[in-house]
Image (cartoon, rainbow, N blue to C red):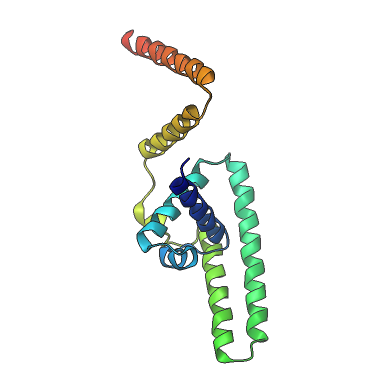
Length: 169
């Protein structure tokens, strides 16, 4: 990986960290990470793609439950900050934190009908398959040369076997 790739990866990890804290809008991410709006939108898509590709459903559900719990803790803390606020500006800031945390909980629980994924529709099976293939290809390219050659031989053999199976009536 070159320096630009490392820098990009660092920014994507920052984006992911902020997304785990409840920030999910490109405008918020662009301000927090210090990138352009379109770049922030791209990073958000990268993080969401990574999340979709990770783990089994049980792991995702436990992670979702943990994130809901953290967001609920943020809500409680936000209300506490609001009640202890010294001026209107502090109260408004605390209520904004509460509002964002509530939005996060509704999205995590699937109650937000304005969710971007719902607006775009479900991701096609084809697109998901393409992402899986790209991830596998990246993993293959990172293997040492002898293991890479062996893996490629195995893939070619499997493709040939499937081709022969399709040709049979």
